[in-house]
Image (cartoon, rainbow, N blue to C red; front, side):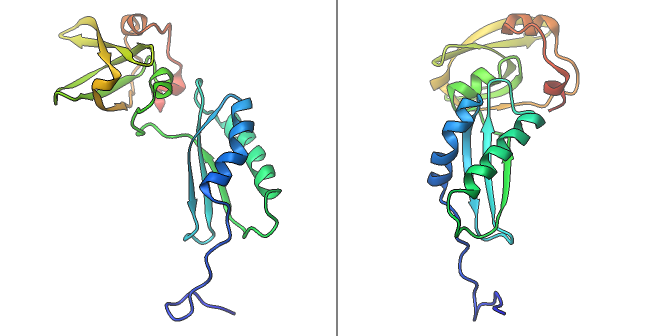
Length: 187
């Protein structure tokens, strides 16, 4: 029996590449209403792991994760019979993922965000409508609410903030959102 030691390293796991996984799963995920945000191949783990990070306009609930996992498993199992055993994980990007694309901003509408601008200033507000080039940010200053239009090109970093209390209804209205579900408040 081979041992994984410096003198006798185990051969690297035979797994599909990131590009192969993306190519194989992108179409079926898109048909289900989800985009693949990232694929990580972790061949050095025992057992190796393939992580597929997906997101959709309505988030990624447990039922969607289960359905996407079944789809991914069936497609990957049929891809290459010589692939080594691995763990498949389908997951959402998580709350701490920086917002970097127009889709990220659209999906985070109604959420509280911290934004750092190219001029070095920072803003915290509720994300409103976005046209892909600009977005509305609902700001609260001493109880007074205002909407500021910000060019996405002027944002160096934007991250959704965790909220433990229900959001202010007027902020949501200004952001163009009628209400936020309990799931979104708890994330």
